[in-house]
Length: 386
Ligand code: ADP
Ligand code: MG
Image (tube, rainbow, N blue to C red; front, side):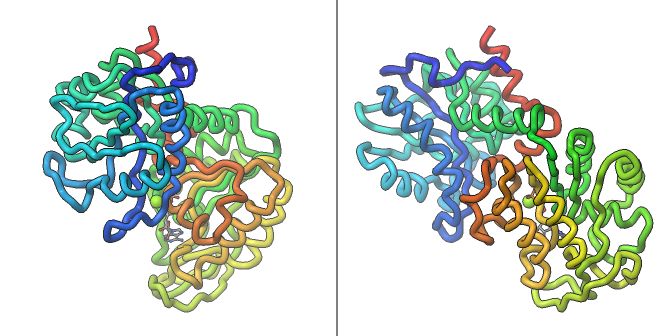
């Protein structure tokens, strides 16, 4: 996978435009999780150390394209950055498409790229305007790398030099290694609610995994092969594929479940055998026997790859499966890799972030790269090298 990395280039005094992923969860102008900002810092700091003229750009949220909206301004992130890069003057610039002035020792942050018309359609005129702002474009926004936007794929085509940053290259290296040469046994966990998107992933991962643990809506779809699943989240169109996978691979279908007749925060949980689910019931988590048997499997693992909560972890009575599995992964000697928006939220909730070997900053990009070992930006970067 040959792509130029920023650390291989001479960037002294060059205008280096770094595309980061500052798309952090925010509430009323407050940053709820700084994980993605912290992950972007090493590349920014390296560029500064090498005396490049640093320009940063990112998206934030989903504003109406083409319209400025205070609610989605990068200002709170710029304020946050000031405390992390105290030696530098950091300026947020709103109007930049016609060009910018860069003063010595100043970092420029370009306002939310999603305020620009054509950003998500990968408009060529816009991409060329971004490219004209820099000598070198650095792609370091792994979290958005599954999308072909003007500030990712577009600019990469038109900038004089395009390369990848340290975070991006780390993500690719670690995820490829886990896929190609995992230390066995490799245990893969796929849960959550995005059933149709994740079945492709499950298909790919089942081929290489020694054990596959399914949870959430994915597990319910496997349960539906032979059992009634009541009003649970599942995907009838995927039962056929689930059946095929089950006959070929080592997939652990839960034996008992926590169910409720209501889908709500305070619903009472009852444990039932998988054969006993009634028409008005929701499966919302694993039962204790299932959790115990999965813990035994995880204790044998040397590599663990985790995407997707195992139950409705947002509801206290239905988080036990996700919580115990999360702690088992955290206490394991195995090399563990986790990715996915809700997976990370669960990891944060249980306070085990520091005990996971590698946490990917990507949700959709993490899934797409694992599934296909490719991302749109990768082929553009490769072409750009020639
Ligand atoms: P990620 O963002 O980590 O890729 P997903 O977005 O696919 O994960 O799924 C996360 C969601 O799945 C959570 O909101 C959780 O409540 C939901 N979920 C998990 N198990 C169930 C279940 N049994 N029934 C309904 N929703 C579930
Ligand atoms: Mg999610």
